Every structure is written in C-alpha cells, then in structure tokens.
Length: 366
Image (tube, rainbow, N blue to C red):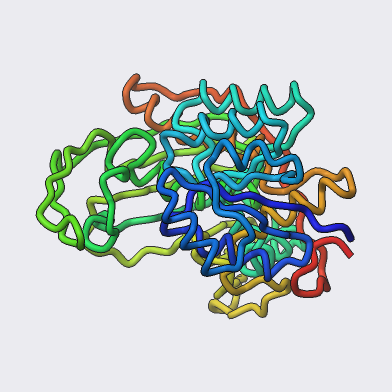
C-alpha cells in the first residue's frame, strides 16, 4: 500500500512517540518537523532521521504532505488545525480538539466543507486493553451495561513537568487534560452521552512549581482543579467521573463497567495494554487475556488509522466527531456546575468501529 506523507507541528515533550510511529506503522512516512523554535524541530529531525526541519508555513506549503499531526499546546489546537485545513491538509491533533465548543465546531465544519478529515487524540482506546474490554462487552459477558465509573486523581503536574503552567490555564485542568482519555474510552465502550450534570472547584488558587527548570515559580490557577460529573448515556446507562489535581492519594479503579450479569475492570485509558478483569456472579475477579495487539505504547495509531481510512474510504476511528462530542461533554460539566442544572448535549457521534482480530503488528487494514 502506498505510504502517506506526514508532517508534525510541535516538537515538544510528547512528540518523540509520534515521530517513532513512522517506524511502527508501515503506512506512515514522516517527512517534516516544524516548531516555533526551529532548534527543537531540527533536534527531532536529527534524532529520527526526518528529511526536513522547517517553519510551520513551509510545512503547510509542502504539496506532498497529506496529514499534519498537530502537537501544539491546547489553546492553539484549533488555530493550527484551521490553518492545516485551509492549506488542504487532513489534520490529527493532540487532545483536546479545542478549548471551546465554538472553536471545535469551526474545525469540524471547515473540514466537512473542504472534504478533509479531522482526527484527535487520544487513540489509546485502540490499544489491546480497551479493545479487549469492548469485545467482552459486545460478546455479552457482563450482560446489558447499566452503569460506569471513572476516576483520575493526582495532585497536579507541577512536581514533575518541566513547563506545567498551561495545565492551570484555559484548556487545562484535570478534566480537559485527562478527561479525554477516560471519556473517549467510555464512549467507545458505552456509546455517546445525551445529558450531563457536574460540580467543580479550584481548591488551591496558586501552585508552586517544584520541578526544574522553573522550580519556585508561582502559577495562578484559572480553571477548576476538581471536577465531578454525571452522565446519562444514550443507551440508558448512568456514568460517574471524577478528575482531580487536588488529591494527594486514593485507591480507586480507573474505569469500571457494571452490567446486568457481571462487572468489568478497564485498564488505565492513558495506556494501551491491560490488565483487564472480569467478575461474574459466583466468582471473584478473573484476569482476562488480551484479545487484541497494540498493548505497548502505540501513540500514533490514530494517525495510521486515518491514513488507512484515506486509502480505503472507510471512517477513521479517532474521528473529529468523537473528539467534538468529548469536548462537548467536558465543557458541559463545567457549564452544569456554573449554571446549577443538567445540560442536554447538542452533539453525538457513532461508536468507533472495533479493531479486527488477528491483525499483524504495524498493519491496521489487511
């Protein structure tokens, strides 16, 4: 199959695993790296033998590049995505799709008007762990899903991240930072959400960085840092989610799905593998073997899936509609808290297709 030429914009912390995807998936050919700091782009190009380190404008002007991977900071995700689409490129971005519904809708609408594709992280739901969970549910092992819980608790990123300020600004906070992993996994497993309510707070108005190189720098917190949400899924199931940067320690599952005939423990949606555990009446929790591959860090699988979809014409899984629905859910939690009411969602999406069984590593369409 013909390779798809890829350009990457944003050569910071997370970019290395995306550059590595060029050797993990045979359909991807990464040909250009761009960053507002040219030295960062050159460093990644040298590290991964990328032919060209360039400016963003030069990358967008390259007629051979079909898909642009947008790894910029959240507040410019939409701006960069719109520029990619205007340049006639398909675009796959880091999460979230945008920091507001309005910006997210602009991206989706422009892509549809131009006949282009939008994709977004996370693509971890395509990993072996959550794909196994999807198969267990669809094979009927827990009966009809009736409820779900999800928990992401920590005390923030200023103790380890080299540049953590953006986590506490618009587009940051625990829901917009980590919520996409959990909500995307839930929509993949349970389907779309029709209504939410939520409660939020910011416990600490200021944070002090203790990591290098900005140790001692104070951060003013502009976003909620503890978010509790309730979800009414279109299939009738009820979901609960808590994301927090205010918790020093907890003993909570990542995600659990509860059905009429059993319960399912879902692995960390920020990863690709297991463990997956199943409990049915009369037995304890049982470790389940993974039914699918891609259990190791496979970030970039969403880009590869878009590339295959471009060749075959099928829908890609980490789609713009899925990412916009997740954005809508996250924003609705905040709106519900601010307005003291439940929010009926205006968006929906199809559940992404499960990955086929028996794929060879590095191949998504046989």
